[in-house]
Length: 309
Image (cartoon, rainbow, N blue to C red; front, side):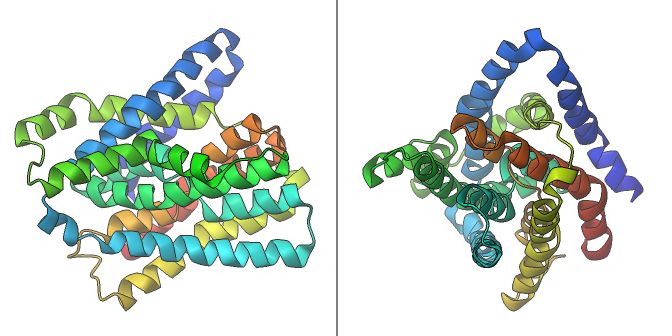
C-alpha cells in the first residue's frame, strides 16, 4: 500500500489541481489549447512510442490484451444495455448509463497510472488496450449522440473520423514501422522516457481534473451506483477470470497487469466532452465520471493492486 500511494500520489495531486483550476476563468482558453495538444500531440506521441518500440514478435506476446479489452467492454456494454431497457429509462439516460458503464478512461488516466505502477514496459500493451476501447467508443459515442440530437452522419464519415483520429492513426503508423522491421531506436525511446513521458502524463492528469465538472451525486444516485458497479467491480472481475481462461500469468506475462489496471478505470472524460458537444445532460455525465474516478483511485485500484499484484 505504501508503494501504491507513493506511485499514485502525484497523479491524485494533479487531478485535484485540475479540479481546483476550474474556478479560474481566464485559464479556460489555456486548457482548451491544452486539450487540443493532448488530442493531437501528447496522446498520439505516447501511443506511437509505446507501440513502435517493439518488434512484431514482441507485440505477439501481448496481443491478448486486445482480447481482454473487448471481453470486458462487451460484457459491460451488453449488460448495461439490458439494464437500460429493463429500467425503461429515457433514451438520453439510457445512453449515459451504457456509455459510462462500458467505456472507461483508458487514455488520460489509464496510461499515466500504468506508467506509475508498472513502468514504461507496460505502456505497449496499455496503448493497444486503449485503442481497442477507443475505436468502438468513438463510433458508438458519436453515432448515438448524433441520433439523440437528430443529426445525420453517414457510415463513411464515421469511419473516416475513426481512422483519422490521432491516437488510432498513431497506432496504425507505429504498426507500419514495426511490420517493416524498423522499430524506434533505443536512443529515441530513452530520450522520450527521460524528457517527455512525465510532463506528458502530468498534463493528461491535469486535464482529467479540469474537464470533470463538480456535481452533487444525490440527483443521479441510481445511475451512479449502477455505473460504479459496472466499471469498478464487474469489468475487473471479468478481466481477471479471462486472464486465467486464456492461460496467462499475472506475474510472468506482460499483458495482465496493464489490462487489469485499465479495466478498473472510471468512465472516460470523453463522455463529458460528448455531452457538452451535443447538448446532452452535462450534470448527469459529470456525476458519472467524477465520483467513480475518486472511488477508482482511492478504493478500487489500491484494492486490486493489494489483492492481485
